[in-house]
Structures are given as C-alpha cells and as structure tokens.
Image (cartoon, rainbow, N blue to C red; front, side, top):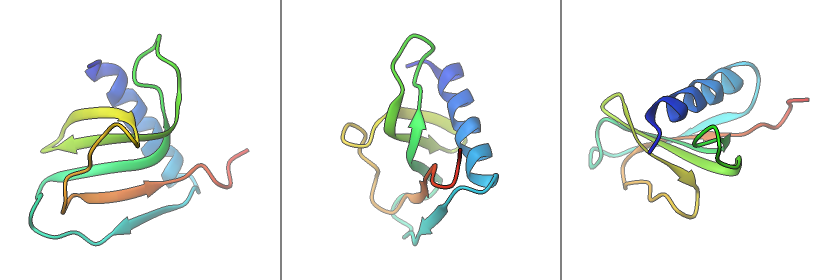
Length: 90
C-alpha cells in the first residue's frame, strides 16, 4: 500500500467534493466507529498505478487503511460513508 499517494488522492477527492461536486452521507451505526469510507470518486492508488474510476478510500482513526476499486474494498458495516461524485466538473 502506498500511504503517501493514497493520502494525496484522499485530499484531492475531498477538495473536489467541497468545490461543488455531489457528496452525500449515509447514516451510520455504532458498529464501526471511527471509520470513514470515501466511495465513488476517481482514485489513483499510486503514481504508477492506473486511475480507478469508481474507487474507495477507507480511513480508520485518521489513517488510510485501504484504497482500491469499489468491488475490491469492503466497507465495514456502520462506517460513515461519503458518496463522492465528479458530476458537475469540467
């Protein structure tokens, strides 16, 4: 796992989401406290890796613990899920 690259991707996704893209939050339960999942954004997991059009970044207690395609990363039940979309971006 490339933590620095993943962190850069997460920051880029958050900036894009705050700049006018769609972002919705699903309700959570207490079964996975401290876990945030950024889902549905474009993710480049490493500088030499291809861009994932529908990626997931899992953050647990402030640390990135998983980065990958939506079909490859399991989001724990009860995690705070932020659906990130690039709709509306040029």
